[in-house]
Image (tube, rainbow, N blue to C red; front, side, top):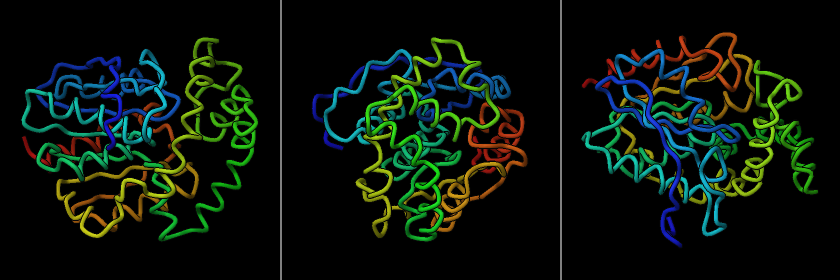
Length: 274
């Protein structure tokens, strides 16, 4: 992490009132409120701390300094290390899951358990199943071409169409929701290098050996094939990982299938202990 310009302040909130402390990191184009449904399933057991990533929700835009994944990781790190609890259960979704994995590598003593919901860490699949990445990139070409030409509204619509799963269609969304996604879609472009080129060196020898805490990887049966390749690649490199598929779910499984995800989290929390 380069630390240029310091840590930008972000908006954060809490859900639930249980004794278990959970740090939750949302996906691209979402915001911290995306965890509301899952947190409600666990409100007696856990307290969720969630923040809006830079360029999302009520947080400011990324200031353009350094690498964006580094900057989001720095922010997440500040929540992990500033909590009164000695350890937190860390949960990440999509891009947020790549940040969660980096936290577990950097601070294994602070992470009681790790949950990765369809992490878009394409560099793992590039090593183990490059054809799945090629298939993803071909399917994503429609929105990446729009982003490259600055058509952010159309790019956001097509991105949501590919990754939004069973959620409301673009035309069904409130205008404010569409505007938020158009604002956030620029992150897809700037985050390609850390996700594809492993700028953080997460695949370097010894890095993943530090992730010894109980880990859960979840994906949906209806998600793009690259999610299976990534989850399988990560799970195969970790010493204590369960790799589970949620039937009927797509990429937005923490929102569309909160009860099923919560059930798997309870089992993980039991494995990890108090």
